[in-house]
Length: 448
Ligand code: 2IT
Image 1 (cartoon, helix red, strand yellow):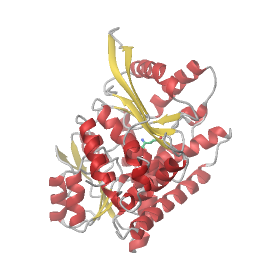
Image 2 (tube, rainbow, N blue to C red):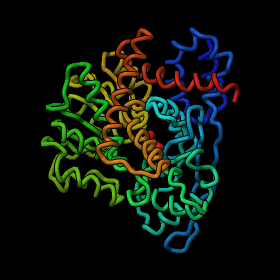
Image 3 (cartoon, rainbow, N blue to C red):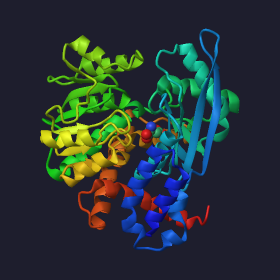
Image 4 (cartoon, rainbow, N blue to C red):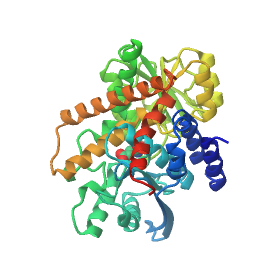
């Protein structure tokens, strides 16, 4: 049995109840054969066995009191996956679907994504099964304070720096940071990123994931002689990432014709632009989680219970919502529809393995999320730098860094794929390029 097959089998045996985690482990490890089969240093040093096991995981009780005076209990998580190249870094997700499998999949992806940014950040992730939907501001604050009352002992500017993810935005980070500061008794701004501009946040962080994804797309387009201008995009979601993507695509002369929610998708043939992009922010703030509100307000087509994949004519498909939103059947529909030959993943692991395999086998280019969406965490890391030097950079400085980082990421995954003889396979290229740096650091640091 090959080294990769053995470690996959062992990971499956140890974590039988973690399907999302196993999905990403299989995907990443299978593409590392090209490196680890050639060089026995990796097997001798147990690199793969170590990289699939988090350095530390904590699960904790989060008790809080709701507006009716009743005690509610949620479960909190933080997985500190890898500190080989820097302090753990990764977001917090507050969503009922959160469990250990979801947090470990996100944390594992984060190791390679953070490595691709070229910045000194390790991989981690956390969150809770708390549902922000329908909660009052006071309830969200009390929940965040309770969550931080346990989490604070595990984080810090040189230890672990959490940030936002689904369900955790500026409001939640504010409440979390306020409680962290009280518990620490000192102002350690670099312990959380995504902070407000008045208390240590970075300009451009809110837009960074979406803008970064579009800068990455521009780089890829340059390599195939395409331009954002005049290109039509079908995207999913209507959260922070979709918002940033819409803003930047419009700015560069492209058009976004769909957005989606858990309830369905809307088709806006005139494009999600102008006040409609601002309305996405309102929809999110309402916590209703319904994209139908967009259709009602702007009188556009609404398709209940459906996703846009293969159902609309667009040049590019760009999932921006959550994991596993493109299944085998969606991939088949995309292939039948035929207009788009490019899938640019923005949300973390939006495509099932069956979906990715089907698309790639049939000649669709897949740009993987761990490269495409790395702009968010990259600007988080720039926020940590600014906090460490007690300065704040201008919006232009941050944007210039972000552009440079996304350009480098595209080049490095392109070159990695090419140098291992799989030109154009960006999924493999991203895994190889992300892994290489982490593995070198692990080899240099001995067994730890
Ligand atoms: O998935 C991600 O990269 C994030 N949610 C952002 C993490 C961060 O530390 O900014």
